[in-house]
Amino acid sequence: MTTRAIKTCFFGIGAMALGASSALAQACPGNFKADGVPMVTGITYRSWDLVKGKAPAAVLKNLAAAVAAEGFAGIRVDNATSSVAAIQETSGSGRPQTLRVTARKSGPATRVDAVFVVQAGQVAPEAYVRDALCRVIAGGRG
Image (cartoon, rainbow, N blue to C red):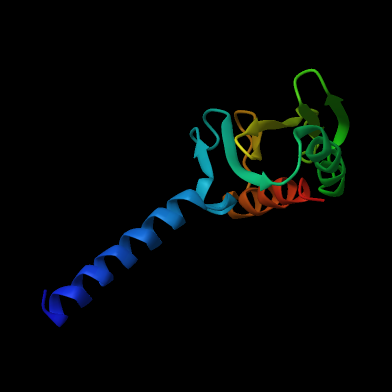
């Protein structure tokens, strides 16, 4: 094998390794999705991330505190479903927006999923929701 062929081979392997590691370690902002039509239908914002080295029960306690820190009310922790549910009423309409966060075992880590729903006729700035969901999910780390 020539020196050039060896360099090309190592470059290709390095590029594949970087691509695989970024796919495996896709952080919360990269997992963010929004579904719905603003002002016409409800909008569902969702994201997820992994919390390594903690059991779902420990993560769940931290998530409840993180949800409270984001200003949500009516926080309910359901240990049976490993979830935290909460509401937020910021529009003055009396129609609450809902948040549900779950913590489930995923291999050696805990997968945390967060879903925030605003009702038809309501809007929420996507960048702000993404950042807030990721703060809640990161709060699961404690």
